[in-house]
Length: 107
Image 1 (cartoon, rainbow, N blue to C red):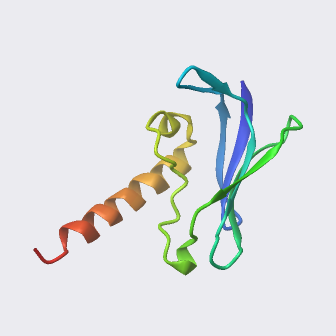
Image 2 (cartoon, helix red, strand yellow):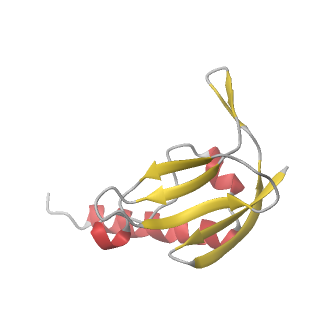
């Protein structure tokens, strides 16, 4: 397995191994991921390997400064299993904030 380094706004969230993803009968190869804010143009997070030469893929997700949640999570629950501990703690905190904001909305 290839080890990837996770960082958000220059802060390291640790390293963890990742495997190619299989979905809908197709295997998606490993790629370096850069989170790019489509509003301000900031590259605010990354998941990058330092041991292999892999292509880069840009994920367009709004950064915190522009009103986004700052979550690295992209819809698939199995991705949470791959996160290093600090990144997982961060995702749980973001999810709790979202839930709290949702519950405080007027009926």
